[in-house]
Length: 302
Image (tube, rainbow, N blue to C red):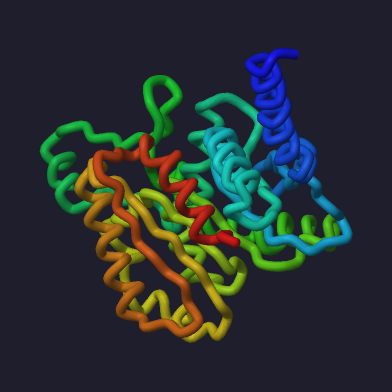
């Protein structure tokens, strides 16, 4: 073998070894295991999607993140988490998506009812508009799949809290006894409105919150009252909150989230890890991939 061919041969061998050895050194990671269950409240049957991390071990304890609107955002949540986890940026957690079976109209109907703290009321401005003989209807969703907001379609958040505390969480704790560390909740839009309300009503039911673009001006800012956070403030438990919105969202959303930020900071709560992130050039939906990724990293960073 001449010198030129010999050099080429040895260089090829060295490069091959350099390529193979890091691969062999890496832990072989299994694919995610997914299990589904159906759990019913008094008025609704929910589809629960449980996604376990690669190399899940039922003898180990895990944190759990419950995320709302799994019908819509499941792929973004699980995909963002898998990237972070496989890069070893975040710890192993179990993801539990809460949704329903059905079409887009059914999905909108469920979330408008479950995630709103009180029955929808027209603002004084809109009441005056309607009193003049004008028609005014607020809807959630688009086109034929939109659901009108009115006293019949909204205000079920207390019942949904009862479903979480009385049905879903006890089911998970019984069926998966190793999912017994911290509990998180991720909510977008009305889901973030619900998460804010849950902090006020049952502050220790959930430990960690990722709340994205909540329409916190609901019924003329009725939940944006510092006194409603008294129980949360007094809680000695360690909580985390990642709050976010897009700067290209409607003014009511940006202003109400900034107002919540002012309230949260004024609490001077002990044992609390909190951040607010406002995204440039992000609207109500384009924010999802960025805020979910950052929220997971903030909450579950190794």
